Every structure is written in C-alpha cells, then in structure tokens.
Length: 498
Ligand code: ME8
Image 1 (cartoon, rainbow, N blue to C red):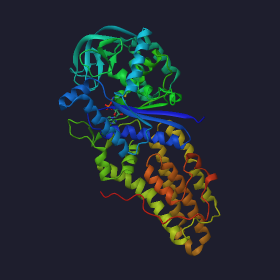
Image 2 (image 1 turned 45 degrees about the vertical axis):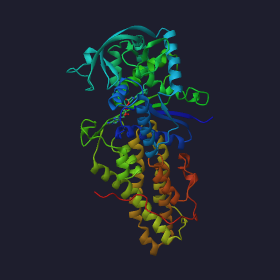
Image 3 (image 1 turned 135 degrees about the vertical axis):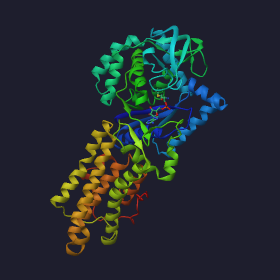
Image 4 (image 1 turned 90 degrees about the vertical axis):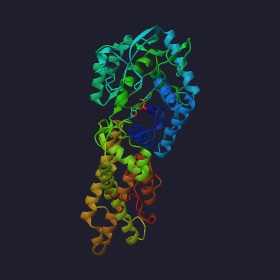
C-alpha cells in the first residue's frame, strides 16, 4: 500500500465571484498535492463550496433569485475557476449534496446521543458576514473584531458543549505541537482557548437555508458545523476512508479559529481521529489596500491569466511572499518577479543551452567526461529533491522554489564562467561536458517545477526528451544518456513588458 496524503482547501462561500485570495489558497494546496503525487503518495485533494447559511440566503434574496439556482451558479464559477487554474483536485464537494447532508445529520445524531449537544436559548451578537458569534468583550465600536456588522439575536438554539473540551484541546495542542502552523498563529489560538471557551450555538431558527436538524424541524444547523464536516463527508465511503484523518487543512488566517478549535472539538466529541495539521496562510492586499468588493479593488484571477498566462500567475502568487505572511499584489512586482525568475533565469538558461546543442552537437545530448566543477554543480542539483521535501512538508512553498531558482542561478553562473561558445574552437570535448552538465541541471529543474508551473515544466521536460518525471528521478541514477535525440528548442517563458 502506498503512503496516503489527504489535503483540503476551505470550501468557499457561494455568495460572490471568486477573487485572487481564493485562487491563492487553492493554488497553494494544488502545489502541495501535486508534489506529493509526484513523490509517490496516493493523494486525495479536496475543495468545494459552502452553500448554506444566512449570508447565502440574504445574497440570493438580494439578487432576486431562488437560492438553489443562486448557489448552483456560483458553485459552478468556483468549479470552472479550478479548471482555469489547472487545479488537480480529486473531488469537489458542495454542502447541498445529499452525500454531505446525510453524513452531517448522522454526526448530529451522534453528538446529541452522547450528550454533547443540548437545547437552550441564545442571546448574543452574530455577524452574518462572518457567520460567527461574538462575545460582548470582542465587540469593538459596535462591530465584530473583523469589522463585520453584528446584530443582536435571541432565539432557541441547540448548543455544543465546547466548554467541556477546553482542557482536552489544550492537552492536544501540547501533545501535537505541529497541529497549528505557523507558530505565531498557534500562539494566538492557545491564548484564545486558555482565555476560556463558551458553549457554541449550533442551530438557528430565524431562517431556513440550512441542513435540517434531524430531531427538531424548527431548527437548521449552524453553517460552520455543517461546513467543517465536508472534510469528513467527502471521504466517508468505502473507497476513501483510508485517507482519514486528514493530513493538512490549508486555510486563510481569517478562519483558523474554526479549524483549530471548533473542528478538533467536534471530532473529539464524535470519537474520531483528529487531523494532523492546520496551516493558516496570510492575506493578500492590492497595492497595500485590503481587497474588498466595497473598495472595488478585488483582483479577478481570470483576467490576470488572460493578460499574462496561467503559469506566471501561479508562480507569482506562490513566491511573492513567504507562505504564512501577508502579501501585496502590484503589477510591477508581478512583472519583475516573472521576468527575473522565469524568463531571465530558467528560460534564458534553457534557451541558451538547448539552442547551442541543437546547432553544435547534432541535436543530441552530448558525451561527457566530468571535472570537479561539473560534479559539484550536479551534486547540488541532486540534493534539490530532499530540500524541497523538507520545505514542502513545512509548507515553506516559497523556500522550496527559491531553492530551484538558486540552482538556475548557479547554472547560469557556471555557463558564463565555462563559456562553451569559446570552448567550441579550443576544446570541443570540454564543451560537450559543460553542455551535458547544464542539460542535466535543466532536467532536475524541469522535474522540480512541475508542481508549481505544470504546463511550462512539461514543455521543458519534453524539450529534454524525458519520460521519468517523478521526484525520485531527480538523482544521478536517472541522469540523461549521451546520444539521446533532442527536439528543436522553443522559448518557454516569453518576457513580460513593463
Ligand atoms: O470562510 N487573501 O469561505 P470564504 C488570502 N466558507 N486569502 C484569501 C483572501 C485574501 N484577501 N480572501 C479570501 C469561508 N481568501 C468558509 C470556509 S471551510 C469549512 C468554510 C481565502 O469564501 C482564504 O483561504 O470566505 C480564506 O480563508 C478563504 O478564502 C475564505 O473563503
């Protein structure tokens, strides 16, 4: 049996069109999923849409559309964005699907039967935008700490006994220091939990758009209880249950509290094994401003892709800031990053080396007799796979690809220094060895880039006539064979104009 890896994105609300923030989370998860697949894991990569709750009900009413067709339309927009972004998800779950509703209702019954859910009455603040309850102490200038409008609600409600899980949660965080990442966010969660947990209202009676509570027709389920269990309902079947517990939930920092506190508490209460890790990444701004519909500065990933190209967008988003930090989108940063990393570094190297071989080596991988300087460069190329494994297991996406770009820079320095164009006249055998070393570096770079820029990496590997493209092939054992025919090289990374 191969090793398994289960990774998820948040399921997105269907009240609006996706923007760059949604694309970011999904692409990051895609990079990690693709890498694991290339590294021999059996991967389950889940994404989808979160379709119940008051926010969706209100948005549909505002649009004057019936709720089901409203959610169908926006869910489809997210699904089609995944195609546009070349996302390799294995499933796409909608919380309005029968498979999900059925699982969540079973869970409810289990929680009720075990005494984890009881009937009471809720009086307090609620923010529809966040679909979250806030304590009086959290309200700042009449608003939620996130800036969302709050309303006072008083209604009968079922409660989940969250307070009873406080100590067990703290023990769990202690026993599993890697559960919440990055560390700064872990500390935030810990201090919140240490501050004391209140029981959580998990049903609503003032609107209808939710999963009905099995034992009480007046109530629908609180949207977060419903939504979090999507991660479970998608694998709650014979073929997929071996993926549980989940290895990695990728979320934005805005929804860490739900994933790092409520989610493990719900699972403990159901006696289910807990996920291994929740990673909360940072927030994108546009030219320094928060991205929001009201400011009119949302960035449409589809437009960005139409203007530039998909792989450039994927590359920029994944490397512009350390994963975990906040970052800023600006057009000039985009162009500079893509030109310097992809066009001038990797693209230029490939174009120079492959066209030189095409003209001077009969379009075949040259013969070689390696010197120390060549072997040294190749050793660092062969060490790349392990470096990437370590970085990506820590979700240091930026560092994994920085290591690839560094290899490209080292190869560019090497080619300048070795100057094969001069060796052509003075020492053609040495020229061959230099070109061989460089094509071997390009092979490693091509394999390494597949998870982040799949189409471009595939073109590069095609130009090297390589079929072994897994991470395990990034070693000397799979080195290029002299005499292999190479196709006519074509530019892969066109330069962007400012
Ligand atoms: O919260 N920068 O859905 P949502 C970075 N349905 N990431 C951003 C972003 C930005 N400016 N804006 C959004 C929900 N995101 C719930 C989740 S999960 C069981 C239920 C990303 O549509 C980021 O991943 O509001 C954030 O957590 C998510 O979109 C919120 O998506």
